[in-house]
Image (cartoon, rainbow over all chains, first blue to last red; front, side, top):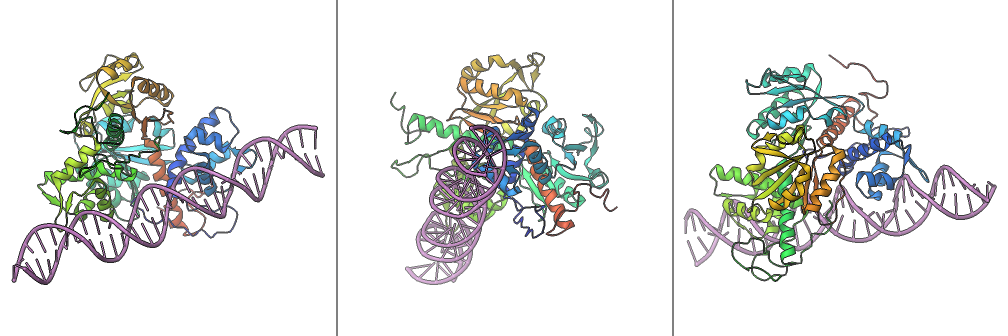
Length: 248
Length: 248
DNA sequence: CGCGATTTGTGCACGCCTTCACAAGCGCTT
DNA sequence: AAGCGCTTGTGAAGGCGTGCACAAATCGCG
């Protein structure tokens, strides 16, 4: 999103390029495949067909094959994909073979929950530092970590090898925190605050806005309601004036 | 995602189509525009140019103009867009003029935070019911609501006019909850559980997986690290046995 | 060893989305 | 009233992503 070019004219010899040029859409699906693969692995599967994995990940099998083909050839025709091999390969590509230390800033409602979210640890991410601007929060222990003041952020990032920052502050504070993270050398930010962050080129920001998701659902609800009420016409539902109560 | 066709050959007379055929990409950005507009409105702006609004929403101005043009012509050449008018129009399209009642299922770490997330209420969404399968949770009061057992879900959905269900349960329970929501008549689901939900056609599911976002960031970290270390070649960083502790 | 069943990897076409560039339209000034 | 500057709305082009359909490759069996 803030990144424009992921070019990498990988012209290295040897069989497998270390860093193929993956389409963004593919990258976004790899974690989904990975989860499905772990699930299959736990169920005792050694190999899986594109059809089977696609079903488990909720995508089209052709899309899955094309996605995986971008990583290289890790399947066997007539057989399928080696589950373990594929897991290793995707984890390598995603950089999950090395543990990523995460700093979480903002310990309100949401931040508190994120600090204890089991889904992070189980996938190689470790939240190693908590920060808040509120002095009442500082010093509290949350899920085994002590909340520190946001002023210590810069030092902690360097000292503790933090590579990803998570912002769960109110929107007014978010840009400031982002600036501090960037200054400290963090180049990946996950932003839960409903606001636009501006960061220098080379820094990746991903945004999760819970309310936006609801609004998109609301749109579809609205659309569906208007369609069922009056297929192909003007909405019934609640439209100020106009058109009172359609047939049936 | 689970929806394939949003067709609506709107052939109604009169000036403005009530439900233009909006591209999904546009819909996803409308909430962002809306937030920026509210911000501008509070700052006292009456009109705003596409350039200005685009900057506030973090997008390209041409894209913004094209998005808005899909809603109809609500701008004035040479002047810009009327902030209030545009807010009303987007809110209407998104169906935010009517309050949406939301049920939240699963009150672990994340669910607890969602129940108290201020960002929902401030945008027209009201969480009106909480459910959990755990009898220890049932009966607790969280942010003014009493947690009910998930078995009461069906009745509550009907009685309280719930149109959107939010799933924040462990992944193993998610499909079951989704089934119950669908049976009760809910057609929009926001899923925080890291798993694939299968639902009948006509039901919209949006998924938010916090760990996936981190994994995508991790990929870019990995990529950036390998590029700075060895531009265009095989990664240094950690390549099997790797070097321990770089620099410093 | 050969054949058929199975499954991957991919060329190709199509559609969606983005971006550019500019004509059309509006208001202000002279 | 006419001209000028500014901004919207949109036609066209290009790029990206998806999905089909099939050739290539592998395994198992007779």
